[in-house]
Image 1 (spheres, rainbow, N blue to C red):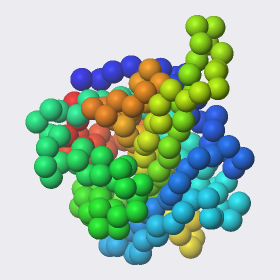
Image 2 (cartoon, helix red, strand yellow):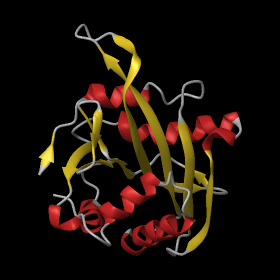
Image 3 (cartoon, rainbow, N blue to C red):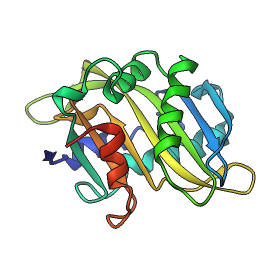
Length: 211
């Protein structure tokens, strides 16, 4: 079942995706060559990247939540029978909980993507982890000082590569868990497609087990 995304929720996240304001903790990913073969991986503390690298990667991550809400970016629910042991939902929850620091989990995730994603060109899988202290808003919608909850989430983007591992804008990706009413919705995921005509919708359905 498809649900509506509140654009203001997404804009609240993207406003913080600047070098000065970011709270991203980690970036991980891998490269895949034109034959669909694994071509190396990376996993590092986001804030230890040089400023230029942080800015470039923030722009990649920002594409997903900043995209055309309810057109390019749509919210889907995980089927209840697909949230158990060995499910993609369980894998995403584990990746989020460890802050992308478990390389075995990350390699499992890359394998699933590579086994199902079809591309005629090299691409990169980029995964970002963030913890956002959601501020309380008063009845006048003005922000108050204290934090309402910590929204811990991951953003994933698949990006075509050019030159020496240089990523272009994501052509598909997701934000998990969904950010609904300024809170974590662990039963849902916001899925991004650059174009509605892309054939990857079956790919989403197959690996994510969403409806």
